[in-house]
Amino acid sequence: MEIDARGLSCPQPIIETKKVVDKKVLSLSVLVDNIAAKENVTRFAKAMKYEVETHQTDYGWKLDLEKR
Image 1 (cartoon, rainbow, N blue to C red):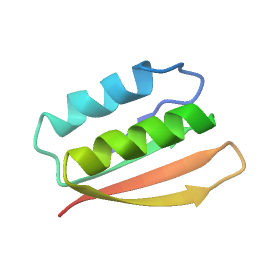
Image 2 (cartoon, rainbow, N blue to C red):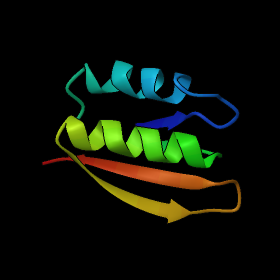
Image 3 (cartoon, rainbow, N blue to C red):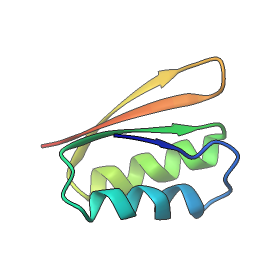
Image 4 (tube, helix red, strand yellow):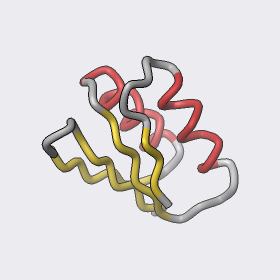
């Protein structure tokens, strides 16, 4: 599953991520285009026990979340 949160201001990327996490998804990717969203989604995901891999892209970052 992939969430495209590019162009969204915080806290919207976290809200969109939480909607998917609440469905007990084991892995997902989140696309973000600003540093605040990258840091906040990463912090939220780790608090929810997901491992986070960050990849820089042409548009910003792709955050791959995997449930521990």
